[in-house]
Image (tube, rainbow, N blue to C red; front, side, top):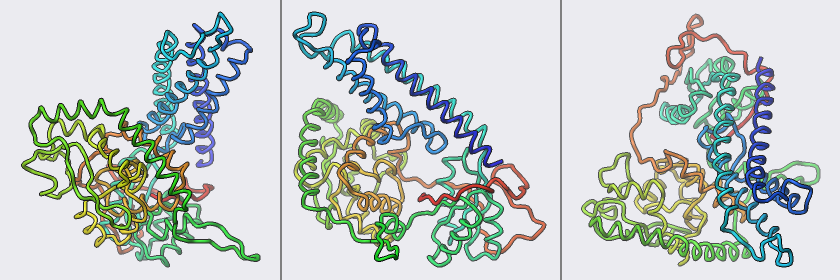
Length: 498
């Protein structure tokens, strides 16, 4: 049954994906052909522009992610494909205008022309493409969840707190996961519990016991989600190395080469200068609005930590009332925080308050991409609670980064540290450019600027004793009794960092 679902899902995704990208291609060239008949004929212009469209779309699909139905949330898939399509259209449009430029041909443009009736057609094509993207993404999710009902999941953890942390993350994917049991890793019937579920989440288990449970899950073809720890990050970035005929994993601390440091700093200077110029009208308008609101100074400065623990003053637009100054009341913002001004809420939502940090980048205090610069009070507290947090200071703090894109403002300190370490250990200049482009996706996420709040989590009480033989496993919601599932049979195991 599971194999049939797998093949049905793959066939459905393949059909919808092919139809979607064919529709995007046809929309662009169909609309632009109104004034450019050559792109529908066998001409050099048609060949060049079509190749540009296809290659750019393939490259940007790698950067943003493609038709990842069932893997990401619907909003994320829609945003990723829309951004990839927008930049593909723009680059292909520029290529088309270049191909149409020929001073020696009376039918062509004597010089490069960006503005004109073609631009209106480009805008119309993109609007049509966005509608098509929404249609195919919505249909994809509808049929995906018809084919694939929620998987029965269990959490094997070392504490109730960790189990609730994992359950909170699972709750955001209710159509994919159904939590039915939580068990301590030393519970006598932990293996039987694993057998009764399709997916197993492991969290906070000692290395020896974790390895045994992973081997058991692998043997019985159970999908594993392992809550990443520091050692998992280290192992995941190890290089394979064969000495004589023995396989080894080569592990070493990541250090930037002189070439990488030079190129990264050069990119920071160029991008920050260009960014300051392009965003200067927005920053000027923001400064005027903040000054007119009469809520104190326009800019806000605060000490933050960067590479090797060096202290610098971060610059942002003020988003809180001056009588509750952040520098005096060093508390992270919470959900519906009364300290945040109405204008500040808008600035935080669209990250406009962070634009002055481009000056920090130009000065060398920060980099465009790097770990999130935390408040000194948070750094001290988080390092006491999570010693791995200190490893983030191996690289200069960044305006954007993996933790800023994948995480949220209220992401837990440990998860922030792991995300930052994943970036540091996988650092490369192409990866930096990929993260810069992916930064745009945060504007499509409602929860990216979500403040800290105390949430109630629907999580079963962790069992430390085996269930009576006649007792049925409790299911979340009103599902009632649960029979042992066989949907995991025949499925290849997957070990994924949560």
